[in-house]
Image (cartoon, rainbow, N blue to C red; front, side, top):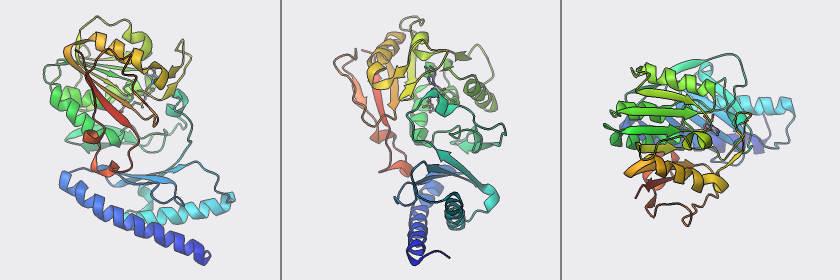
Length: 320
Ligand SMILES: C[S@@+](CC[C@H](N)C(=O)[O-])C[C@H]1O[C@@H](n2cnc3c(N)ncnc32)[C@H](O)[C@@H]1O
């Protein structure tokens, strides 16, 4: 038993979890969504991100100076997980815990940090995705882009689609499911490209010529593309990235105009680019971007479970 003050905090956490779960769980059931974010740092004393993946719960703790000893922190975390599991009606074997570093998104953030694989398959809008709640920092499926993926699917029929910084290829799977004529999936990580191939195959998209995966630095790859080839480009880069395979670092505020302009070159007139960034202070450089047709679609692509707690931005840029 902790102090009265601690008890009060756990009670607040339980109440908050109950309230949000009642609200979000109802919406999720109504929309047929099985993977969604339940809690994201709602209370400052509980700096956690909690997501449901079917019957499994992913809990990530944001790194902070908590002032507790290791034993105290372990006890605090155990109690916190108990509360979360109880509210959501899950048992302990279905909980996965992660410590997230609040470092700028270098490629290292996406590298594997364990050798054990705990993969399973989840359903999203009738499509299948491999997720892994324990071996990587992220799960394999970014839930905040659920609606953007549907949008891409709805626009992909007969189209040539390019998915840049593709991670595990979820946008590619949706584009393929929407009937794309061709989908190119580009990422600098072989692990994630392989994951993308497995996600495509899991959904029956196995033709290598039609569904190409390309191991490359996006900045360099864009320079090799034929003009006006694609109809749809998705570009969701990290805020910062560096790697031995790259000549230069990527800094999205500094580099976005060049990246976007290269995408525009690769698009047919009237073709669309969906550009997304997690950089909270991002400002599009409208002077440099070679299209006046820039639409902020952040709101239109915010899923119910991210309302009021979404920090990424999303733009639709049309090739004039
Ligand atoms: C934010 S994630 C993209 C999320 C993805 N669009 C999705 O919705 O699932 C960033 C990805 O960019 C990749 N990456 C980082 N720097 C890169 C670069 N210069 N060229 C290609 N891929 C890069 C990482 O390996 C990682 O998979």
